Image 1 (cartoon, rainbow, N blue to C red):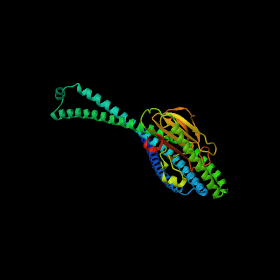
Image 2: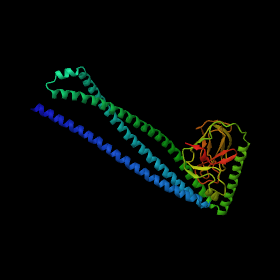
Image 3: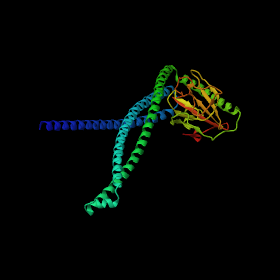
Image 4: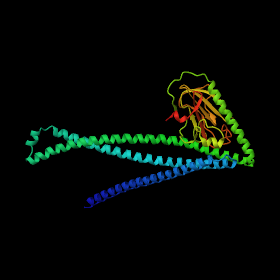
Length: 394
């Protein structure tokens, strides 16, 4: 009696411990799911804040250029960068939780697949054993017609189980493949966003430093500021004229390939479009390209094969730019660059890093007539500036 009592107690505690582990794992899974939901909600809230911040930035950009407005704009852009970093950090956590959820689902699917394989193996073995007997032998070995029908039905059920398990295994296989692909995409996204965080953090530091430098300029009178603004307009117009003259002077070659360009940076946030009337009112100059908002120091890539025709380093206070003539007959121009990764005359292949974006006021290569970090991108065809969106593809 004591032996059975001990065994009973052992079995009871074993079952209790197993149940406790299951409940613990279930609780942890539910807690993770709640945390993931919370982080997804936080991410959505931050995205809304970023959209509101961008709307405020757009309003200030349309206002008349004054020294105080430029400081306000920098304040808004610094806040936008901080929000972007907050969003990136939240997304990193969210992706980590999503990866954990997918890994848990993969384990469940593998366990289900193992159970299905064992059930299939058993069904096939049973079916094989019954297949050794003919229908006549089964009938002769049956005690009654009902017994015979029961055995036949049993064989049919085994066949149905085999079919069902094969079908289930195929579905599990497809689910595993899909989830593994999603997991790989999450890993790529995580790597990409971690690299973007480094650039965004550096951009924020540059903008904070630029604001400190511009605050010193507050000692200037508004009249002095407007004089500098006029000088900056003259510089930018001179650069535009130089670009046009250089592109006309380049010997024309037979184009190779379609008139297609890939985006030079990942951002698709256009803050000033081609021949933007708001830009013309604010800066007093036509806009021959488009401005794409991107953190200071973003790697800029060649949108097609080509050759570097011109690089101008504006130095600490001037405007830097690069011109590329592409084999397909198009030419592209990049302004406010903070650094270069190639030299004049270099042959380029699509996707090659050619330089680094700038545009933060007071930083090398930005020029004086700029209001924040971005890439100014132009497309020229047959000696005329064209709308870049007519040629860009993803």
